[in-house]
Length: 333
Image (cartoon, rainbow, N blue to C red; front, top):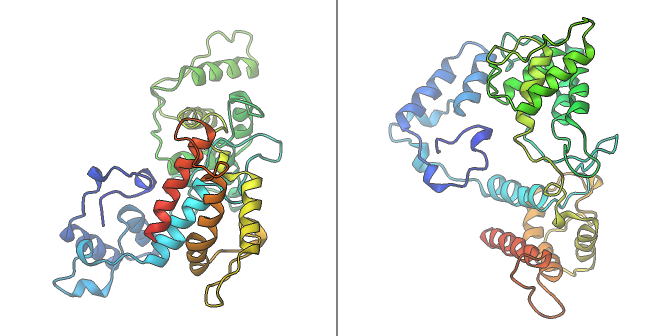
């Protein structure tokens, strides 16, 4: 409907940038998808424009920017409500907080899984190396500051253990330029330091970072990825949110168990937030957002011994703002 596409525009809430797309342009893109000769060509077109052919285009008056109806089940309940609860409030016990080595994660990212049909022609990956893409993506989310964090040197070593094609694919999926320009000084210094450390030559002082050149080797792609990493959150303070602690989730589960509901109201998993609860359906999100979560969160974040929490920068004030924001969404459902 609007011109914002791809992951770069996924969380853009600046209304001034929400320009509607052009109907004629959409029509030509849909026709191009319809007339594509291969599955790969169709996938590439859809990834680029987000448009497929539909028989509605046979109607002269069809204009999806004005006539498309938002599906409340997928958009609101399984979309916005689910995202608010799991990604924003972190009410999900299965959400990772540390890796197998005890290193904390600093952020989540909407990573693109590897698909041979979508990958650029110049990135050829053996099927046995495909799991390494996820390892690269996982490594880039590690915390690099604070308690139980990884150093950039550790992260470099881990990335160095993955194949070049995996590094290339992740860099491509992040739309990183292949030119080694404007790389952070800390990364270029680490590049030189590691080069000297691993060099078998007696004279290591000639090792320099190839600034301005195109990345051809594994170490060059690692430098590009770590430079991107430095632009993301460094520590886990924001990632492990105050809203998603174990006590809050236990309280919500207690409210679900103890609340007496009319027979016509859909039930929800009593172990909500745990992996064993399975996939929460749209009807269950409706019940959660209209019944159980308002009761649980208002009592937990909106009550300070019978009074409203202070509207300041304290933790209680922060949780009150989160509650107001969450309830505004629940009211809209």
